[in-house]
Length: 350
Image (cartoon, rainbow, N blue to C red; front, side):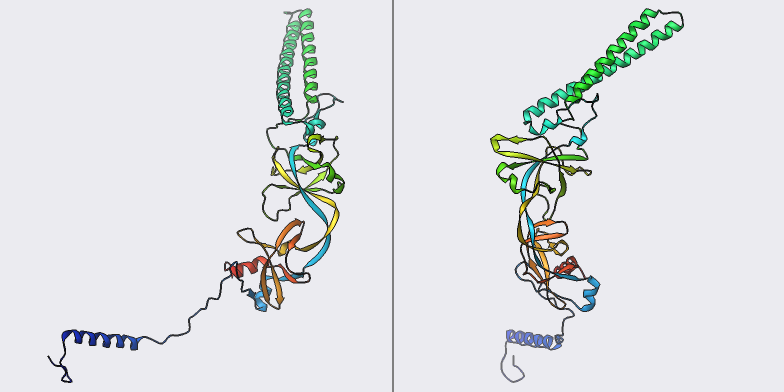
């Protein structure tokens, strides 16, 4: 077999030449590359942030507002452990006027004493229920004896005897009710009350450093970052201390309408100290918390330019966030629209 040029060829050579021709034809038919319809830049990550640049219209639409980072003298705050207890305001009414209660002694009782007290309260409640049943039965007996006397089928002696039984039953009810009042409010109530007391043991050497007139901020242990807690007012209480621990008890009253805090729960109590310190502060609205609990603010270093910076949050005081570290004093940060900027940067907002 001969080729067109007169050079002998084999079937294998023909197949190779045909393959080269086909590949060349396909290459020639491919269109020229064009510019892609969209270009995706570098996405934000923990290691490197490209920042966000907005047009004036977009900045207005997001409602961006800025403020300066400041350094202020603020009272120091220390975190102590506390215990949620029954408030004296939740006491049941006394059975007789002027009856004293052991409720003021409750904070100083150890767990074993409280259990014994709870058992005594249960017994006293049972005695009251039995006395009420006896009074009710005696009242029925008196009513029956008086009706029989009116119908000429009874005697005055029976009426007098039933009236005496009724008087004894009422006297016994008053006695057990007064004894129950001495035991104070239930140590273990069935439901969490709407107002509770918080006992905060403090080392005796620290007592003079604490501003006792200021409220405490009560929060759940292990609560969300940035949770400023709930304010509890200081209240007067009989002296309570633990000599073995060299501690003195402080008491605060806390409104608990949503039952956030349970009786017996251990809580964190932030107390205001008498000393002050220079603190880096920003508006709380400027802090953004990511899905992993990291805290950030957006700095505005140039017009329409925003860069995210990590900050270390120390505590929150109302609408002010106190930082352990963050941008320099005087830096311009976003106070309104920070969450929208975060959504724009990480890609879940338009």
